[in-house]
Image 1 (cartoon, helix red, strand yellow):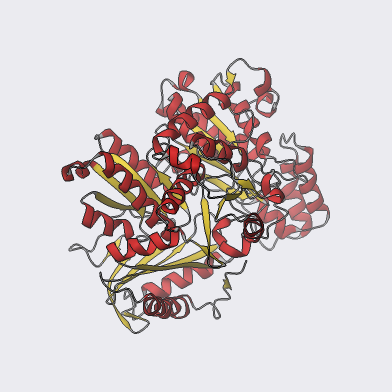
Image 2: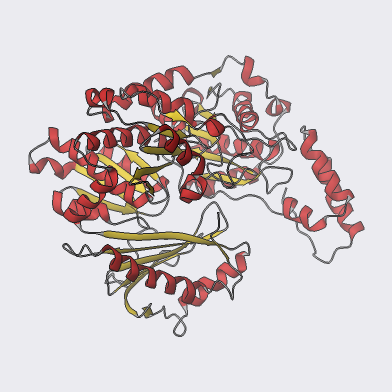
Length: 612
């Protein structure tokens, strides 16, 4: 429950204060033992951290370390969250008892708290089953995209995926999808949280019965049907099956100790390829992520080392790596004895070009493009905008996060438009409209076919990337982050930026270049608009400020929704004909360094620079 406490309480007072917590019904002896040990060892700050605050719904749900306490992911907080979700679904869907819920899980787990993703998924199901709500609970781990796919396929009221994606091994999450298959957004997140807080006591002993999911008639297993249907629909993204079957290219795949191995292998077979060579040390699920310092393939070459060395031994040309829940995809290509690890923006240029190239083959009339859309988050490359300007289709930006892309995709489908491709720079891609979320499984197969097609034309992925830039203009980008574990410091940094040159005055220059426009989505301000109001929705719960400079650089500072990071993004969109890559990169680097040093002041604010 909600606690109010005095920071000056002595130990005896705090012992009395926290004792009622231990008498609440907690049927997980491991998390109960954690709290008792903390109290016995007088670790009061840790107890306050765990018990005196609750998790808030962030990016499509909850994400936090596993373990005991209301600020952690554990049996009790998952039961409480599901009770709140149930209550809210009942208000929104009179037919929730027939539509039901989809529940999936990844391979995460923590031995000391007993909080495996599978157990938490079964408890999620138990709460719903105790209220006679049908639950489609996957019998084994699945990629995150399978949950939104199943929500749409079965017409479910909502879906829950137990995953923390690429977060550190200590974390887990409770990711919620709405009936349209998109991750939940406002106001659903706030209303679910309110419903959770209204009824924190577990309803009945049935909520704790993990075994209920094994014998209740209202629980079904959608694994085989969803997997078969997904792989069948995946054929819509395959354009050159005969070429794939005869391609001499060899691929290496790492699943980063997560769920991806089996599903990427199936996707390759669907496309007519031989299965990729798996990285043996990372093929099987391992909640400790024992072979990587960071289970996030977005970190690049530093965490892809095992994949690259295997590819060299096997004479494989392309490395593919899916993150632990297989919704993101990293790609590297060997060329001239070196490895090129593509950024998310570079991969988007290749995939966006590829999807339009194949669509245009069967839709040669220029007018046909009027119903075609591509989407990207606003912190991602503007390369799709350059495509749209020349090719005649529509391009739109959304706020960061695939929940906004999924929501817009649903709106476009209702008006008869086609969403051909969407992406976010953090290696999240959606080819076609198979799933209203990023999908590393389908993207892996599409990249393989693209590489095979280019190889048949004596081209590499990197060569084609430069061909694209020659046609549409060079787009040079840089994305990184600093870590800040102190929320007040983050507030101070962004407050300073908003009052940089006096009260209510943003910076006027960056790296020696004039700032033309400032957009502050946190406050709703946009100097480029006649009324100075942001076109993108206001998001007061997070920080995000974008600067457009006179030299064509667009740079954004924002806080992460899932990690204690301040991310920074910068891109220089060059004019057609300017192919001086070294000069463009040097100019962008200069501006990006100024953005970091002058606006974030890492040394003064004790920020931890990116290190893998």
